[in-house]
Image 1: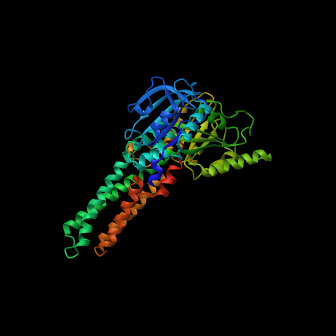
Image 2 (image 1 turned 30 degrees about the vertical axis):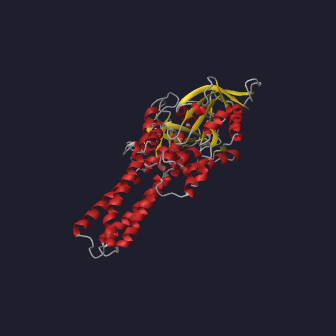
Image 3 (image 1 turned 90 degrees about the vertical axis):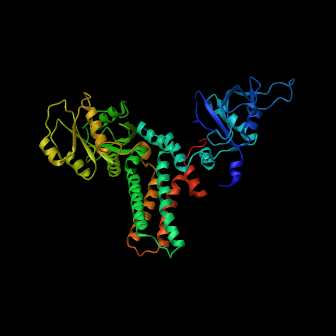
Length: 472
């Protein structure tokens, strides 16, 4: 990253656009305090440039400065609180000024425009976090965790993101990098002094250390399944024939009336999607149209969409009628979910049982079968437990800071693992040139360095930070 980008001063609105009690305009860079002096009129007369770090001043943002004491006062833009954070004890390790305005879009935009006219540049997406990385306050994995904290959909996802922001994953990756340096050192010595070679004890130690690194990389990479669920969530489709209670179940899980409910079959004609938190798991819950043959063109399109959603589903919530025998309509849907992870929901268990349970158990041997009553709100906790169990059994197998939730990190860990497996095979064969083994070791270190930012290009940084919002 060129020095020119980091030597200018940037500004942006750092709170969501729209009406609110408070909105924040953030400035970062060498001229932040000077620009603050120009646009801020402190009630106590102390300019931002004279304020100690991490202090707040009350005053007004003015659209111009009076020429002297006898001049008419400049027009007030907003009544604000201004916070000063001096380098290096700030988010970016640069001088930062944060202006807490009223949350209206006009006042925020006017304050931002004043800062830009005084010499600030509008920040690029994620540029504050990029500067925090470039200035050494956080590493690249921690910077990416900032976005995960912002986008966390459940408490569990937030815990993982915060643990990574605190450096949990980075410590594990850096520990592996240190181990690779220890492995490479005697190998490089044998390359520099080939006449001495490597002693048998050294060879055994090399293999032992290599195996330990391989196990650690496998452990880290193996947590991605859990991490991806926590970060991205799962797609859960409520499916079944018409009029078995799919929409009522959707409303019950959402704890609000989101979907129209009617005893008339075919009421739901389109897929309705909502996000819920289920025992710490983000779940994209979709209520679909009942799957059945129909002559109605709109209903046919709804059925077609149900089938498309079902094909993409991570888990199917198959709803059957406890108070009715299985019929061809049920069997059609059952066949469609045969290869899916699923939970079988027997709705209307408050009514007389007519469904053949022996047949259900034969159709779903060892499956998760839950009898509920949406109408009476009976055994909903049992359904949530079954859904959680179907997504994963047990929960975390690692501490939150040791879970890989980022697909980029997973890919790089797997590449490093491939390099180390190649090292192990080559060294186990005893005839591989040490120069080739050294290349694999260096590539493994390079791939791990891309996780924390030890080895990173401008293009990669741009791809990562362009996903951030402006102002973060």
